Length: 287
Image (cartoon, rainbow, N blue to C red):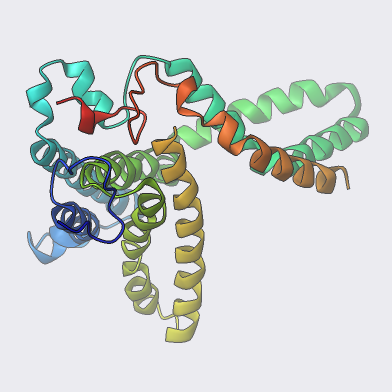
């Protein structure tokens, strides 16, 4: 039987490829659609403040993420593994090689931002030179105040906690195992999975127009956002499967990033049970 385009002929897929793609598309749509459920479906009154609005969206994102995780578990029948740790490993949450899995990709990704980091250090050093001996105390006080303000800022929770966690769970931890077990090649998954994530941001076009932004400007803003999410999504999917002075730092960081990209994500660093699997956890070969 002929292998569909983009599918790997190495082993039979655990689920049909079309079912994997359909499930990913449904997750992307539901992740966005559920955000509008309180007002459209439940007929709740509009939130009276930004905090109330975001709290409602946090709850919606939690519902969508939980539903996606349960759907993935059902499609892949992960409960048949028996061991809870093995079930979590399907979603990329595991205890073996945890230090390497956290530290190495984090350091690798930070190389891209080496220029910004050095630039900020340079500005801080210049501030020390201007302010003299009291800068240590003032910096410490400003740091404490900044942390207190950040903890109380609902946008900080939205941008750095809720959105990253739920989006990574749905668009990486759920979708990539489905596509892997659907028989798709790694290269296909790396370039395909971020498309679902980007399409889930098309609702921003509607929201911008509701805020009075004209169509062409809204299209430009959303287009740039989609382009960025696709490019970064390629890298994030790759990591999941494989698991002046400032200018010089930008260049050096970028060179080091691409130089270390493949060595630092070698599956041998993160798994002792490779067995020629297509991904680090090899779930499709466990059965």
